Structures are given as structure tokens and as C-alpha cells.
Image (cartoon, rainbow, N blue to C red; front, side, top):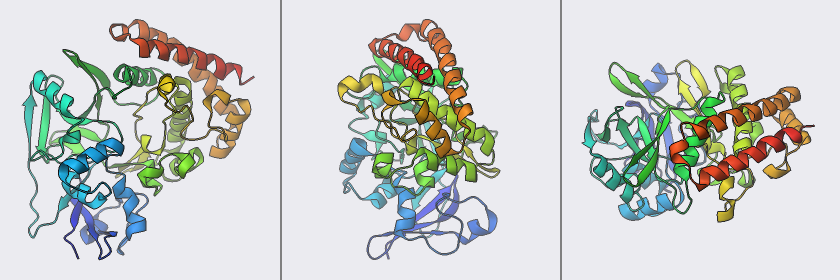
Length: 415
């Protein structure tokens, strides 16, 4: 048997992950965790004494890792095979989304200390410039970061004045997202959509645009971190693919990923505030249609797994993908609405079927579509003329035009 990995939640050992003789994943909860905690590592891995074998445990852990090109570059830089999930977790799994961390086992586990290094704005620019060649700074001594997704990101500590790079167990509290390669205006696009979401009542983390010289980036405060008198505390969370036992390569509904019905059922069955969270999830679905976000898949919604019970996490990764259709990005919805994946074809009957699929009264759904469309119209014009006046660009003009069309169509097609 190979040496295993200690799996922890906020530095408390939850269990052990190892590979069996056939190189298959095996996970088993720690006896002390089972005795003292009611929180599972994942809703797909309920607390039990028996080990979870590969087909049961692998999807959760695979969903902790970066995807696509970023994963390929990290694997190459670390001298690992592209599909070696276990090897990647061992090398970069020290600070994952939420409170999960993985450490190579040793005879005498010692609590890992952490330190921060303040970055000058020029140093930060250099790190961001190098991210395509060194995603998540993988390979730098003392840094073991893993964030899911296909976009370059840099976890950072920000004290409202300076930026710091964390080493060892030092937690980040913000995530910096540079512009997406080959797509114009993504920083302004995402910042605008997140600000718009907050303006119309969706729960989202605090965000802002940071610019130094020619480098413009999107910065988002981590909702899976809490500030306490003892410092930054990690909050346990998982995305809907993890909770529903779906590997990351199947995150889209068309290839076997979560459907909206499955997402609403999950919230209805597990949330400690199901009524509020179901309405929030409904607003998220409608908002994504109205801003033209076709990439709203199961990894872009999460649950916080707290001692008081699971609840829907604030929304993230909100940006309009349809303004990039001329680049070849698909306009098809990641999750169908009433059986329809073409956002331009949505009619009243699709919203009514969607309502039946997710167990919400049709009248409520139709009312929310109209209400959100009206709120977005007012809020987007206010943001465009106010906060985002210094950031006007072609992408933002296209976004304003698309949302204007969507608002009109959404309301007109309900009659």
C-alpha cells in the first residue's frame, strides 16, 4: 500500500485518502472525527466507518483540482502525468476551495504554520503575468494551492490596503482573476455582472477591479473564509457536482452533469434554510438568462457545510458568455430550462415546465422573470453611468445591448 494523504477540514483531520494496489482511490473517515463531528467531507460521502472506494470517493477529490489547460501546465511543470489526480492532490492540495486540505502523511503529524509575504504592486503584476506559465504558482516552495475551474486565478491575502502571498498554512481571503486569454473585457464583464447581481438582490461576495499600470484584474472576496479574533478561518464548502457525486469532466447537463431539477432537489432536501435558498436559486437561474450567462453549470454553485447545517453559498462566476458568441463560444445553456437549451427560444411554456420540474409554482416563476428583468434594467443603467463609467469598453457596450434585448424578450414572450 502506498503512503496516504491526511484529509483535513480547517486543520482538523477528517480522514485518510490512499491508493489501493490497482491505483484506485480509497477514503476512510478518521475515528475521532466520526465521534466528534456531524459534518461530512461531502454530502456524497455520508459519515460512516467503512471506507469509500474509488467510484464513491474519486469524484469529490477530482473536483478539487483545476481543469483543462491550467491542469495540463501544472502537471507538466510538476513532472506529473496529466490524469494523475492523486499526484496533483499531493503536490498542490494544501489549500483548496473551502476548508479542505490534503497533506502527505508522516509519522508525527505536526500542525503546519503559515506566513505572509507582502507584495509590491509591481511584484503582484509580475506574478499575474507569469500565471499562464505557472498556474497557481505550482512548484514554488511553501505554496500548495488548488482551485477548481479552467481560468487562471491567484489566491491572495488582502488587508484593504496591501496584497500578501500566503505560505504554508496561511489562508488567503481573496481571489484575483486576470483577464481570460483571447476574450476581450472579461474583467469588466464579470465585475459588472457581479455588481449587478448584488444590486438586484442576489447574494454575492464583495468584488472590485484592481488596476496597476496596464494590468487590470477582477478581485473577489472569498465567501469560504471568515474573519475571527484568531485570524482567518476556513469555511467548509463543496460545489454541486461534488455534492451530487459527479466528476468534473461531466459538469454540463448535456454530458451527464446536474440538471436544474437535481439542483433544486438537492437544496430542498439538505439546506437548513430551504425556503430562502430555493428562491435564491430561482433568482440565479433567471439572472443568468437575463445577462446571457450560458456557462452556469453545476460547479458554479456551491453549498456551505456548516455546524448549523448546509446552506446555499453566495453566487460567483457570474459573467455574460453570450457576448463572446462571435469568438465561437456556445450559446447553449449549461442546464436546460423546461427542456430547452437555446436561450433565444425560451417561451412561457418553457418557464412553466421548468417550474413543474423544480417544484415551484409557475406563477411565482413568471412573476420573478418580469420582476428581475425590470430591476436589471434600472440597475444596469445606474451602474453603467456611475461605478463603471471609467471602465467602459466594447465588451461592456455589447453586454448592455444584449441585456436590453433579453429584458424585452423575456417579458414579451411570457404573454
